[in-house]
Structures are given as C-alpha cells and as structure tokens.
Length: 248
Image (cartoon, rainbow, N blue to C red; front, side, top):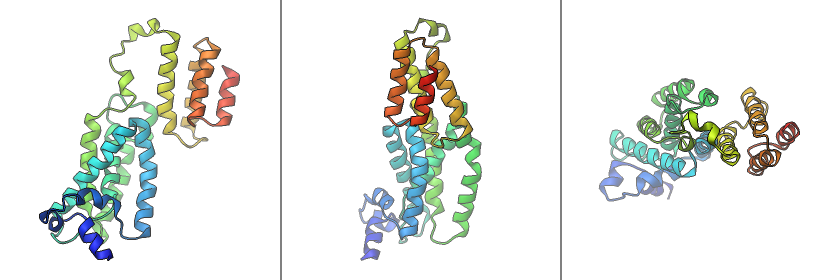
C-alpha cells in the first residue's frame, strides 16, 4: 500500500507520462518516515514563520507552492524515470532561496541581515553537499526549489515595501500623527515577528527604538494604542509591554 501511494502520489516522469499531473503538488505532502517529516516540519516552522512575517501569508503561499512545484518538476526531469520523489524539502529550499536573495535587496532592513543573504550561504552549501553524498536525497529538487526561490524573491517585494516605496523624505513632516503611528505599527509588526528570542541584542535594540518612536509622537493615547495592538497580536511580551508603557 505504501509503495502504491508513493508511485501514484510522488513526482516522477513515469507518473507525469501517465497523466498524474497532480503529483508535483501531492508529493509535497508525502514523506518516507517519521524522521523525514519531523525534520522537514521543523525546518518549515523555523523558515516559514520568518518568510510569512516579512512577506505576509499570501506571498508565503506563493513562495511555498511555487518553489515546491518547480523543485519537484526538476526532480522528475533529472531523476530516473520510475523513481518517485516525495517530501516538502523542495519548497523548504525555496524559502531558503527567498531569504537568501532578500539580503541583497535595497529595501531589506539592516536588522534582517543576520538571517538573510550571505549568512545563509554556509547552510545552503552544507545541505547541498549532504544531498550529493547521502542516498535517497533528491538534490535536483533542492536546487530547483532554491533557484526558483531566489528568482521569486528578487521580483516579489516584502510586505513592508508597500509603505516604504515612493515616500519622499520631504513629506515626512506633513504626516498626521495617526499616519505616523500606523507606520510605526507596520514597521515593528514586521520586524518583531522575525525576532522571537526575547533576550537577543537585536530584539532589545528594536524594543528601545520602538519606545523612542512612540515617545516622539507626543500623544500618550495614540502611542498606547499602537503598543497595545502590538501586544494583542503577540508581537511583544507582557514584560516588554510594561517596560515600554512606563517610559512613553
């Protein structure tokens, strides 16, 4: 039964030649054993929440299924015709590609440099070397997903680009306090969601910057509203909420 599921749910040239056109997607949901799915789900959790935090849910889904589709088609093209490929690693490598190229975009905040760009190169190289040396690993799926992620990440801008583009610096003073408050919320909702470690220096720095920008509003009620919304959306902890509240 397991073999039948793999052959009719996994991606291969044999399956595609027989009209099983759904297999590039169905293969993403099939795994060989518990360790296979556990490792992929752990990687997806770590990378997925970062990509979703920066790009939003809709773009994350485009990245995940788009790179998974291309990676699986790459596996079918380069693998033996009757050997099926299963697993979500093609899409996971696609997310790595998205984060890798994010480090080279001009609209990427400095705060994200430690999890994007060149900092991911060792992880990419190690995993590709492991894929070439270990058995039953489809490096063609990994490389296909990675390259597709790099391409999509270059042409699809992050979520925060929507309100950073075409914002002349000469018009900053003309903004209403409500607009400035909304910009502060959008900025920190994106950044703080990517920094889950409460004790990291980067997160503490961003919390301090958040306090400073809220104080500069010179409107306690408006600043408190922004802070409370960040807290209600689990972007900041209770201790961070109280610390900032006392100082604004």
